[in-house]
Length: 302
Image 1 (cartoon, one colour):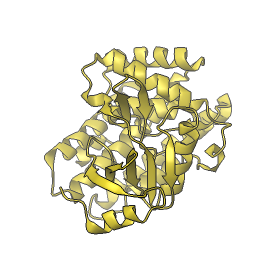
Image 2 (cartoon, rainbow, N blue to C red; image 1 turned 30 degrees about the vertical axis):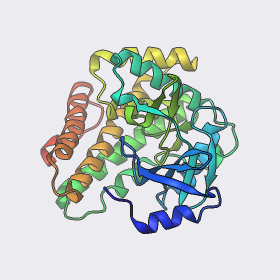
Image 3 (cartoon, one colour; image 1 turned 45 degrees about the vertical axis):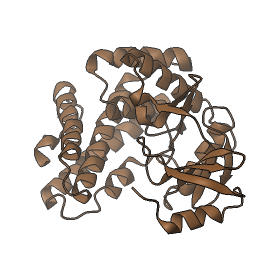
C-alpha cells in the first residue's frame, strides 16, 4: 500500500517536523492513516484524524498521555496527532495467555477511569446510546423498515433501562476509551503497555467500557467473572452487574451494526459479516437467558 502524495505533503508542512528521512505505513490493527515518521533526530507516530472525532480523540489522548497511559504527545491539530513512536507489537499479536492479556488491558482501563478530574476530560461528550445506534443506521439499504423500527425500539428500551438504573444507583461517568480491544494496546520492547486509538472515547459509567471490552474481544463466558474481579481489584470499586449486562447488550448491537456497515462498504468481505453475526448472536443468547428486553432475534436480520 502506497502513501498518497497529499498525505506526505501535509506531514511535511507540520511544524513538529524539520527534516523527514522516511515515512512508512503502520497497519497493525490501527484505524485510519497511521504512519511511522523518521526524522534526523526522532522516530514519531502520526495519525490522520477523523474530522468528526478529532477533538474528542485529542482531548482523551492529552489526558492519558499526561499520566503515562498513552505515548507522549508531540503535536496535534484538527487533522493530525503526532506522538512518540512505541517499538513493539499490539497485544493481540503477543504470545500471552488470555488472562495475562486481560490483566494488562484492565489495568490500563482502570487507570484511564481515574482521570475524570484531569484537564481535557470534561470537554469529552457523554455517551448517548440512541445517537450511537442512529449514527450506524445511516445506510437506508442495509435493513428493511421493520428491522430499523425494531432496532430503534430495542435501543430506546435499553436506553431507558440504563438511564433509570444509573439514576437509581447514582452511577458516575468517567473517561471511557470506548474500544479497548487488544489491537488498541501496545506492548513495548521494554514490556510497558500503552493505550492508543481514542476516537470512540466518551464519558460514561465504568460498566460501559467493561462491557465493550468483553464484547469487542469476544471474551468467553467462562472468563467474564475473571474480567470483573480483575477490574474491581485494579479500580478498587464494585461493578454493577445488572448495568454491565445492559451495556453488554447495547455494545453487541452497535458492534454488529459497525461490522455490518463495514461489510456493506468493503466489497462484501465475509469475515466482517461473520463478526456482525457473532455480536448479534451474543445479544440473542443473553437476552433469551435473562429476558432483559423484548426484542426479535437480531441475528436473523443478517
